[in-house]
Image (cartoon, rainbow, N blue to C red):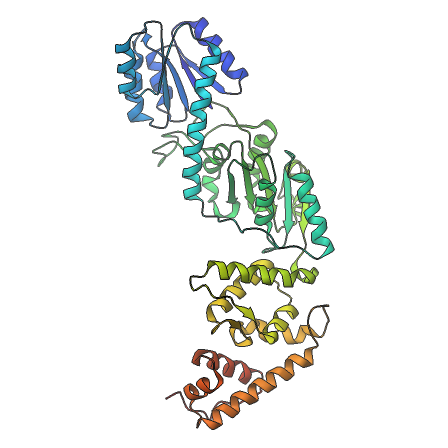
Length: 465
C-alpha cells in the first residue's frame, strides 16, 4: 500500500517509514499539517498515519478534512497523549484506528495488514462489478496432439511468475487460455483483470494503466488507481497487446521490469506485484522488424510463448467443442430443453473451415439454438454462409465428416418431402409445415435454402393462409 507518515518528530517519522518500506509498502513523509493536507488531497494515499499534535494543526482536523477531500484514504491516529476522549474524537472524525506511543512496529504492520485485507475485498468487488467477463467454465477435453501439447505448456507455466505471450488467430480462445493460467497459478484467489488494449483511447492509456491523482488533468475529478494497482497480487491480461503505441510500450516495459508505477500527476512511485499475460493475433516479430513494436518488450513478453493453432488445423477437437458449447447453451437456457444436432446439420458443421475459430462456433450454435424448433438443430437453422460453403469443403476429407454426396442426397430427400407436403396441402405453407411437423419459420428457411441450391422453385407457391 501507499502510506503517508505524518509526524513532526524526524526520528519517529523516519524509523516508522523505514520499517514500513522494508515490509513492502511505498512510503512518503510529512512533517506538518499543511504538508499532510496538500499530499492527501491528491487522492492516491491508501493509508495516512497521523500524529495528533502537529506544529501547525491538529491530526483529528486532518482526519475530518480527509473524509471530504479523499474518502478513499484510510486514517490512523498516533499520539502520546492517550485518553478515551481523544480516541472517541478521532473515531468520530473518521479515523479507523488509534495507536498510542511508543509505537511498536509489529502492531502497526498488523493494523496495516488488516486494512489491506479489507481494502482488497472492497476493491475486488468494485472491479468485478465493473468487469463483465464471466468465466467460460471448464474446458472440454482436447483430442488433437497440438492442443494436448498446449495443455502441457499451460500446466508448466501456470505455477510460475513468468510473463506469458499467447498468440493465435482472432477467436481461437486466447482469453480463456489466460484465465486458465491464472486459475492454475498461486494467484488464483486474487483478481484476474482482462483488458482490451485496442479499446482504450490513446490519450487515456497512461491514466488507465497507471492511474491518476485528483486534478492531474481536466476532468480528473477523483483519483484513479489504474489497472496495475487494481490487479495487484493478481493477473493483468493485456489482450491485443500489438495495438499499443510505442510510447506506452516503453512505459509498460518499465513497469514489468521494475514492478513500479507512478500515477499521472504524482511524483510518488508505488510498488506493484502484478503478473502480466499478453495476447495478440498480430505478428509481433514482423512488427519489431518494421519498428512498430519494441524489441526489448517483445523479448520480455515472449519469455514463455504459447501459440493457439486455428480450428481448421485441429478438426478432431471440433466434435468436443460443439458438444461443449451446446451443453453450455442448454444450461444457460430458461426452458430446460436439451438440444441436439440433426445428422445433416452435424455433417455441415464438421465440414466447414471456421475462419472465425472458436468464437464463430459459439456464435453459430447460439443462433441455431435460438432458431431450433423443438429439441433438434437442422440445416435450416444454420446461416447460409456455412450451408453454401461447407459442401465444397467436405470432399477434402477431415476424418470426421461423412462423404459429401450423402449430405447432398439428404438435401434432395428433404426437398422432395417438402414439395410433396406442399402439393398435398394445396401450396398452403402453414398447412405443409403442420404436415411436416416443423414450424412455419423453419419451412421458410428451408425453402429459401433449397431454392438457392437449385433444388426447388417457389415462384408458383402461395403465401400461407
